[in-house]
Image (cartoon, helix red, strand yellow):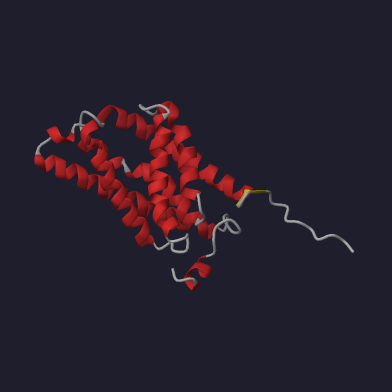
Length: 200
């Protein structure tokens, strides 16, 4: 009697090699996209915060794509980590870019973890992104000296952060859906039909 054949795909814990490579590919692509964003942010963020706020959605983009495309635990955090490492040379904060990206990855993935990774409705992405953008506004209020700006500029700053984040989330969801249609993630991402039956 011949022994049963094992799946040739390599596993690391619960993560397959294809899954890890998918996160790496999205993370590297996102990191490369963030390089010019970092250079731009470094020149305008502290001097003119209103010119910085409209681009924060770029930092959210790779994390949303990974979560929406792969729909697996750790996808957002791992992709954020890789994107952060790629951006270190161009970031004004150096290695601090990794911490920033990890915070984004954790906060965006948190609601899905709370829901045990069984719900992936677009509304969850949008709510999580809006909350993240608002929190980021609070965190950067002092470092970017937003308090010294006129009231209208302060309100506009926060509004632009949220809108930019939401645009980034919507674009990320659209990219994820387009990539999924090509079939390249078949066998890596969770099946949408199975999610629907579990109550998506």
